[in-house]
Image (cartoon, rainbow, N blue to C red; front, side, top):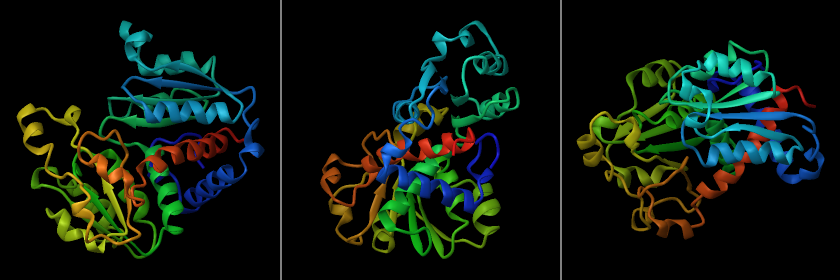
Length: 305
């Protein structure tokens, strides 16, 4: 495995499987891992708002017996004075053993990783990559379904700007007999490079549709996403598209009894709160899974047995 994790495609299928196996063992035997990172420090450098990702990283390190330093707002760091990402990373390297970075600019974690000798984990860079969210999604799929193969995965909502969707497609395209149903309005379709460089290149079966209800009966996984205001340049376009797909109990009437509904969160209104009571709603279990997969990842990158 590389020293850093910037893009999910840096991980081989075997490395993903290993991380999922370790995360599932942590779930079963947390006491075995309680002091694995004793004396080690995680630096969380979050230049963008985050709840789940930042707290997940922090709780992961604490449960491994380590400690956490860092910032959750670029305004409270020297970035507000104009310090470069590279210089911030070099400074933090003096105090920490591993860095988790979220940044609005694509490529910023890559710059940090090339500037330091300690591991850097990309915790989200603009609309580009969010590999630990993808690992969270993969662990959730494996926990819910018991496999990665032979699945029909529906991705619904913002498939153009949704970095989590792009990364999930890249990861799941490596497994056998996986089919994607891409559900979105015309303006938010999956980018052409994702279709050509990942789906078509790997011979993965996929269809594009505007109808969530029409796709529902065939799905094993439904991956919902929000339409992200922060990715739009035009407020009018955001307002016009933000309510395109809202999942309700009625829309689930024709779904499989063992459908798993995932969402990277935060949710706005694209999943009705009434769906939360449905046993097929997996998105809060998904949040919990994020802690365990990040525990497994940080141990691996730091060379902890």
